[in-house]
Amino acid sequence: MTHPLERKLAAAWPPRQWADVTVVAAVSGGCDSVALLRALAAIRAGGEGRLAAAHLNHQLRPEADEDERFVSDLCRRLGIDCEIGRISVRNEAAARGDGLEAAARDARYRFLRKTAERLGARFIVTAHTADDQAETILHRIIRGTGIRGLAGMARVRRLGHASLVRPMLNIRRRELTAYLDKLGQSFRDDATNSDRRFTRNRIRHDLLPLLRGQFNAEVDDALLRLGSLAGQSQAVVDSLVDELFGECLAGGHRGAVEFDLGLLAGRPAYIVRELFASVWRRQKWPMQSMGQAQWNELAELAATPAARAKRHLPGGVVVEVAEGRIRLQR
Image (cartoon, rainbow, N blue to C red; front, side, top):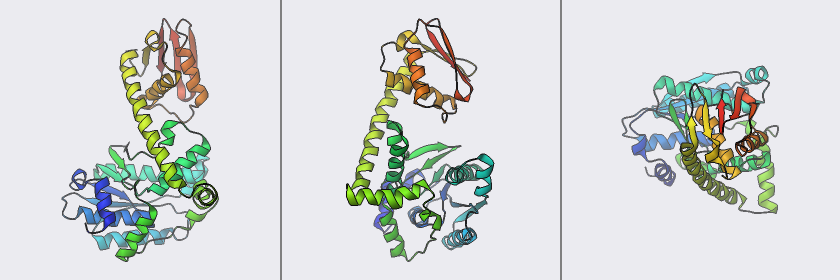
């Protein structure tokens, strides 16, 4: 490790955690992921583990096959195994009735999860940067979000049997460009990153420059500070919710969860909503169709323990209130 970026990455994700196990790095061939791969290879030198690159050809652009060859050749030069996948994202989006952005993202994570499972990898690593984090937070503000969403992308989360790690969330894209310049390392330029049909690109190329130029030259840093504070606040909320879950849990079997409404009485509505959201996450119930109205309805049901009620919520979840308890089952 001789370059400052390598040292910064190693500080963010210490090699002792991963240098002797199997790691899968997502590599598109663009600047960020190529810099990640080169830095990981340099940091890992001497480690006993296996570093593999995973590249998914989305078949969206005529140059996609050239991207694939570039990544394959780079891995060969570095002595790194390269796992290649191919999928027609356009066909998948049409079949799902979904947008290209969402279909491509889902396809990528599915490919990474399956690759990690096949290789027995403990970690999956992606090249998301501080710039990506700022864009994500701003995007979520525009769409509408809560504290959890304001925290941005999690640095670590589970993906299948592996941990998905984003070790460069404290590194700016310009640092990666300078690193590759120093190495004399080329990378691929994806023209779709400038396609204004995609919301993320309009935020990156239009909205953020406008905010920097006319409102706050340091708006990226302001967004990142907001995300950090939101993450700290959410950690406090999660701790309170975990305590409340254990205190109020009245039973549960066959996929059901029951709470004692008497013990929930008088709790802040926000914490009660977060309690119910934690049930969805613990049970792995689908949350996509659950909006603020549904969470508010659950909190209102919990605030009236004397009533009897039954509700059918999105995702096939049934809620029943009776005898001072609220029961949720799917």
